[in-house]
Image (cartoon, rainbow, N blue to C red; front, side, top):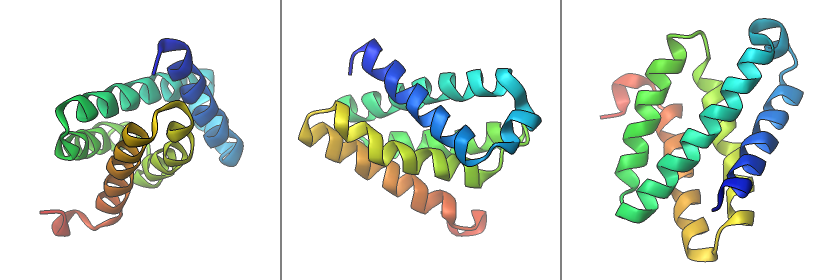
Length: 122
């Protein structure tokens, strides 16, 4: 993905989240929206790194770290899951098939991991 594509994915994802959860505007305002766009750039960077390393585990480790950071900032795990589910739908439109399938797999596994209670993630 090039930078223009990443920006489009990040913006489309943030727009969808803020449209689905309008209370986020009240909770986090414009600054929260900007962070959501920036966070999606990070998600995409980590997906690309996982692809280059052929390591789904590197993305799963990132997802768990991300949850720790965002929950400490009053962002629920459910919003992270929602974000990743949106990326599952959007990312393959901007990648070649093999890479898109790999990234979808990473995101899907991360969603399933985050859906588990913390004590069952081992």
